[in-house]
Length: 99
Image (cartoon, rainbow, N blue to C red; front, side):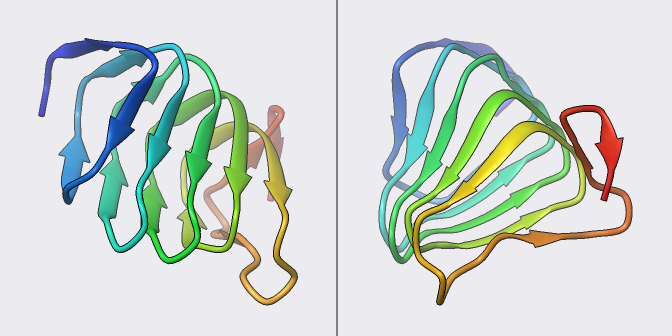
């Protein structure tokens, strides 16, 4: 998907996003999501979802219990489930700082 999408946007099927979400977005349970584009707000990953962030989230990445890997840039990371912590790859940047 390469276009610009309005927000709020909830992804309910597996998606690879090359474009932009203008605002907040969320990923439903059991959905596989790849971000190579930009979310210009917060991105919430729900319990049971899978996400790989190679692009940019300008706001918060909120992990509610999903399997999340960051290799790109995010404003901040909030993990709410200690059993499902976000993985930061060496290429990841959080709030402008390398992981």
